[in-house]
Length: 225
Ligand code: 0O2
View 1 (cartoon, rainbow, N blue to C red):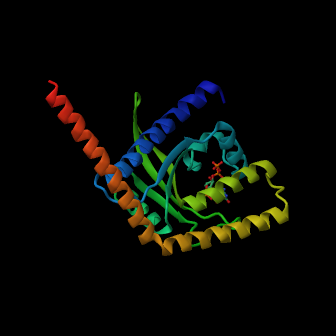
View 2 (view 1 turned 135 degrees about the horizontal axis):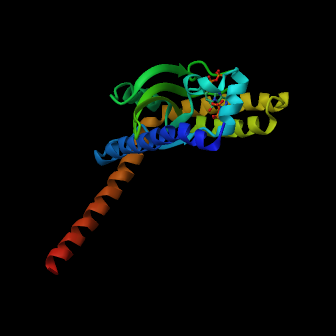
View 3 (view 1 turned 135 degrees about the vertical axis):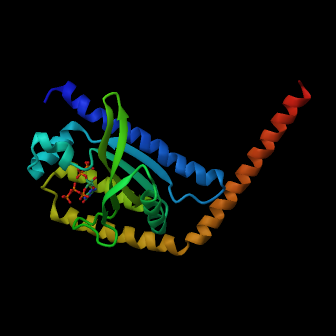
């Protein structure tokens, strides 16, 4: 397929990713402005590379004409949480949004994949406005903790390096590391309230200081007018 045609296909997906990243960052901002704990810690997004789309299509026997219909993660959003408990809150936020229509949810947290991979996936329909009119497309939203993300980033690079030939010993080590991630997340969950208290009071202190500085600036401005 020609590069220009790929550009045309992928452009609305880039728009969807850009818009959703802004929207989820804004969710985080709204919690912060309301001086509440945000269940979303980090937001990122990407459009799948053409080479990855073609790899996946080949792996799954998907024809070029059915790529958009059958590959659900051409547009990918990742929402990173601090604690496992936050994941449910984030999923609920997504379920309640009127701009996202959920197609499917995949819970790889209750039931991890054979590799040890843990994450919660929501496949949703999202409509972007293009010069050719509205286009409804699919986006995959991956929701996971910082610890799950650490594991999956490392494992993804190793998968990329070894393809189907990952040594058994390395595979086992990764499974053990996945168990350790689960233990870490559970431990952190058990002290969640304390950590949240500490973070909130740090944030409150920072907000008070920035409010005072803002007021001093305003007074200075008024006094020197
Ligand atoms: P990339 O490079 O991230 O885009 P399946 O039919 O289950 O094999 P499907 O239908 O793509 O795969 O759905 P699934 O399993 O929900 O996977 C979608 C994405 O989740 C993957 O996209 C990965 O990003 C992530 N993922 C799934 N399994 C694993 C895993 O074992 N390890 C890691 N690190 N990530 C995983 P891609 O296209 O595979 O990869």
